[in-house]
Length: 129
Image (cartoon, rainbow, N blue to C red; front, side, top):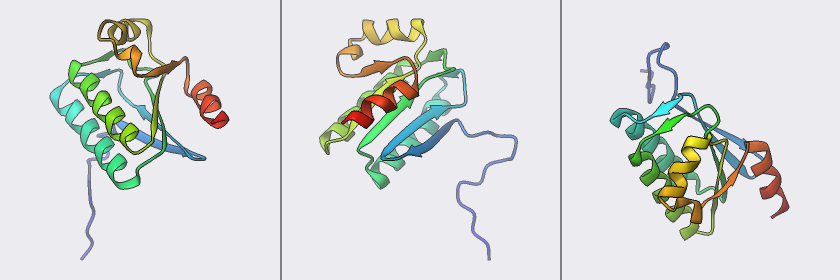
């Protein structure tokens, strides 16, 4: 008997991708908006599973191409930051558009996250650590 976990229809693309580059995990999104309950739930489930299972020390959450996120997504990022900093990990944010930058400033999340124009810039910073 063949068991396939997390089977998804072929036309249902993954919302989130994890790419490991050296000791850094780059998390990117395949949607321009992450705001629906099911969208955030999917991202939440995949991110939490990855962080709990793999305990990455360095992570870049790349929002290149994302134009809108919900407040629940902001909460998820804070939870991710808490969990990772709790075991000595670091989370950087890259590729946010100006309107998302304003959301991070209004919510004071710009005080806990470091922002980079793109994933490559963030990778260079982490390589210096």
